[in-house]
Amino acid sequence: MEPSDRELMGRLAAGDRDALGPLMERHSRRVYRIALAYLRRPDDAMDVVQETFVKAYKSAARWDPASEVAPWLTRIAVNQSIDTYRRSRRRMQLLAPLPDTDRSFDVEAKDASPERRAIGREAAEKVSRALLSLPETQRAVFVMRHYHEMSLEEIARALDLRLGTVKSSLHRAVHRLRERLRGLA
Image 1 (spheres, rainbow, N blue to C red):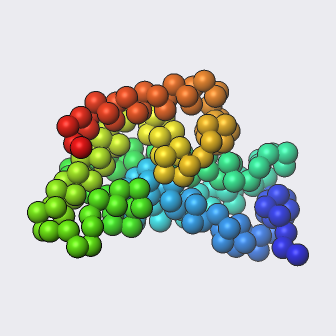
Image 2: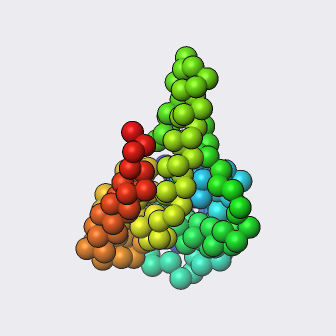
Image 3: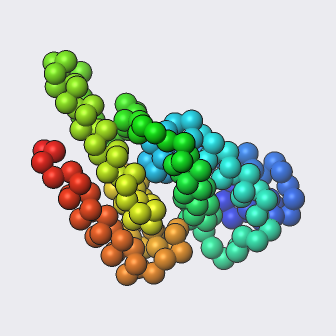
């Protein structure tokens, strides 16, 4: 029987480096999706995955054994994504369009005309820019809710926010995105 996440974290906190591998196998894909949805850049998202697990390893002794591992890792991933975004924001001159692997905006049909594909790419770029223009908390809440289908309670735990704050952040994010994307449909 495989050890639980809590058992692995306990071993990691005790200095057992071998416990990190199974945790990474279980959670790296989800951490990557969170970072990619937040940052929109696959290379940056991979960096966030690595930084998240390095930070988890270094902070394992401070992890509360009564709490769940997945929300704790999610919080680290979101914080790392925010830090990465802040660092790259100054360097970013042009915003990249959404990657083709993003299932949330499958705008282009395989048999679409070149004109329709170009329109789809433009729409994806507008959505990406609108999402990146949101304040950090609103963007994190929106991404976790709509890209990762997390419940509001899960988001509140992962971001260490009150449920009311999550609800209002989501409402404001949706309102701002609607304003910025008006006329896109």
